[in-house]
Amino acid sequence: MGTGNLAVTPGPAADSPRRVLATGALLALGTLLFRLPVFLNAEALDSDIAVVGLQAWHLARGEFSPLLWGTNYQGITAPLAVLLVETLLPVRPSLALALSSVLGHVVLVLALFGVLRRVLPLPLAALGAGSVAVCPEPLNFLTYSAFRIWAFTLVFLGLYLAERAAGTARPWRRLLLAALAGLAVGLGYYSDLFVLQLLPGLVLYLLWWTWGVARPRWLALGAALAGYGVGSIPRLLAAMQPPQLSELTTAHLPRVWPLFWEKCLPYLTGAKLFASATGFDRPELRPEGLALLLVVLGLGAFLLLVLGGGVIALLPVADRTARRLAWCGAGWMGVSIIGFLFTHRAMDLMSARYLVPVLLGFPLVAAPVLDRLVRTGRTKLAVVLLGVGVAHFGVAGWLGYGGWLEGGLPTVTRYGSGEDERALLAALQARGVEAATGDYWVAYRLTYLWREQLVVPPSSGVERYRPYRQRLASARRTALIFFPHIPGSPFRVPEPWEARFRREGRRFERLTMGPYTALVLD
Image 1 (cartoon, one colour):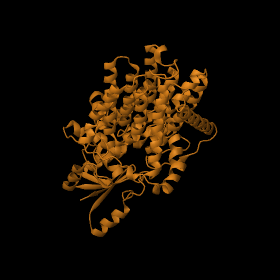
Image 2 (cartoon, one colour; image 1 turned 90 degrees about the vertical axis):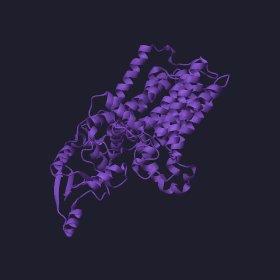
Image 3 (cartoon, rainbow, N blue to C red; image 1 turned 180 degrees about the horizontal axis):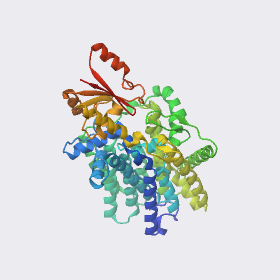
Image 4 (cartoon, rainbow, N blue to C red; image 1 turned 120 degrees about the horizontal axis):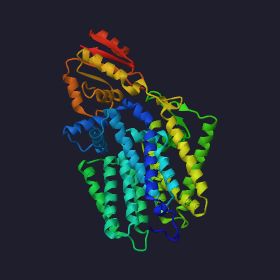
């Protein structure tokens, strides 16, 4: 490992393999346990998530598409992961869907742990990875939402493989690992064009990586670029359409800045908590007492580590590896914020998801200041600073589960158990209904939970799979499904539709199951 003008490193040499494996196992277990509310309420998936599971079934039947249904910016990595988990694990489909995503996050956390071990003692490397293992809701949602996390995971695998390449003295091994690193990043970009936000940081990392030793790693750089080219083939064949630089304009700033500063950035960092009880509304939770104290301390630690790491990364007073990681993480943070502020994509509170590279880059940016504290004998201070930040992130993420908690502990909700949905399916089938329709956020979720026994293409919203519409058109008996919790939807309440059908003289039957109302049409 290149260390510049610092010859001593606190890296992995002193750690026994058994201790490293035990720490990694604890990180993996903690990552899984933190998602226990998700596993208990696996049926509460939304339609975006359900589409991934539906496409996995169609892939298993030989129905291939290089793109995730209804998108031109996501590949099929996530459906393939679901298919693999469903094949290997004897669990119900909705749980397999959640597991396929969370297991991807476990791999991401372990890859980050491996990267940080290059420059930090084992406890600090574990805490740094822990800041992503437990995290505020904007990132936490992506860890179990099935459609995005594997793109980030592949990028972190690429980063880990690049660091392994930097640490080996064997030329052939360095070339192989560098090629695999590039391949992983290329496949990550194919998995989701969101990775475009991470590419500038990776370029900064590669510049440091290439000139990090006495002899530049030209051959290894070439291998990495070749691997990236191979990994890019699926993206090119799928004709994916990345955002253009022309999208950047100051015209959006007056609208976006208040959203960024007052809602999305505080939501991202846990300064403000917005917890859902229904999956649609997100009222603000105001911390009090000790919870408020933890928010203040956690945010203070976060800011100190980010600012301190950013400054030290500019100075030759820390390990070169830590500095190149910080430049990578800083690139992620900066591009993410610029993209948020100067494009049209940020629309509401949930647009905080576009800022998640800030959280992903945090442990990388913090690496130089943590390394410096260790080298100057202040390891305990480093542990406290990082530990307080991780505790704050963990509490914010846990409270973000909202209605999936009762008294602070995970609970199974009716919506999360799918009980009402099963009863509704039985009632509709008993009346000879062959297909139904409703709002997008109900449609694909019910189609998935009902295992396509009765398909529900959306009447409003994005059309993700056209053959469902064809089945609706050919059905002899259909139904309209209403759900009251979807803001602004024409399918919240049935009364306007009932009045219209009465005027038209059209016969219908009204059914109610839990929060759902269905109008069965002749």
